[in-house]
Each structure stands twice: as structure tokens, then as C-alpha cells.
Image (cartoon, rainbow, N blue to C red; front, side, top):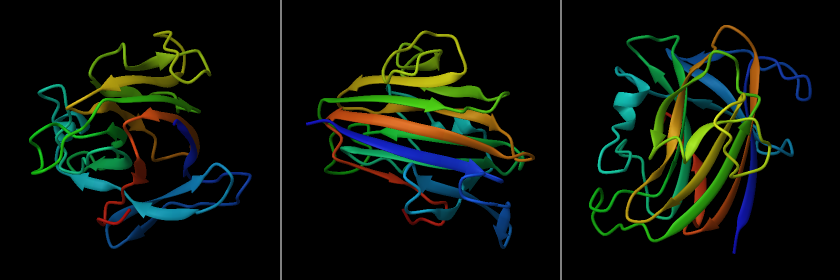
Length: 200
């Protein structure tokens, strides 16, 4: 049974929901996440480490190794590189690499995804596994990768490892909004947006 999800990821002012200024809790920057229907609006901290997005993704063995992965789970989170504190990234990871956590094994899975409204200047930091699964697209159909355009598309089929990707270069000096749509076709039974304070 497939399940669909819509999510808005915003920084700055969004006309439909009012002003969302950048805020800090201590020195941890906060961002705004809400579901597409305007429900469950939350201010969330990014995950922060002193390394690039690609280094934190730690792609090897056809999988990410951030330590946040879980079997049959799709996670999303914002990421800040503390060595370059104005460098903001977005991660989207499905499943877990076999052996990464005791007792967890990712079964056969399929996920389609689409992100529209991607700010200009954004770059792909990591494709998991390659650009046939996570790349730019001019299409607005989930799972349709054209390898051009300004939208990001995911067409992921995997087992015993992760699939997903990360983008970097999201602006922190202007307002933006990305719309994230996904269809969990099989093998993913839950999803969450991971907050940098360890909650979800």
C-alpha cells in the first residue's frame, strides 16, 4: 500500500502563514517546518557538525552513515556545517545499511519524491546511489527524473541499504520555501523530520 506525504520547509517570510524570522536558541539557528495543509507548524533546530554535508552523509557501501538512519523509516533534516556556519543543507534518507545498527535490516523498498521551489544556487551534495535516483528534474511528476530543470526528484528502489540524498547551498540571507512531496510505495512504514536537538 502506498502512502503520500506533503511538507513545506520554510525560512523567512511566507505570505500564506505570516512572518517567520530566523531565530536562535543559544547559538543554534531555528527554522520553520509545516505540513502542506498548514498543520503542525514547528520551529526546529538544524543538525550541526563541523564537516561538509557530504562528509556527514558518509556515503559508502551504497548507504548513508549519519547515525540517524532506521529500518523502514524515511528521515528528513536540515544540516549546518559549523566550519562554514552560513552553509545550510537538506538531507532526505530512507532505510538503513545492513549492520549499521544491531538487529536492523532494511527490506525491499520503493520511494518516489519531488521537491519544488528549490532556491537558486542550491547544489546536490550527495546522490544515494547516483543521479539515476536523485537528481534535477523539470518534471512535476513524482519519480520522473529528466536530469535538468530546477526541481529535485527521487526515484529510489533499494534493499539492505539506504537511498536518498542531500543538497547544500540553501540561502540563509533571504526567504525561501520548498515543497516536498513523496510517495512511500513499499518498505517504508514511517517517516519523521529529525530536529537537531534529538527530537522528531
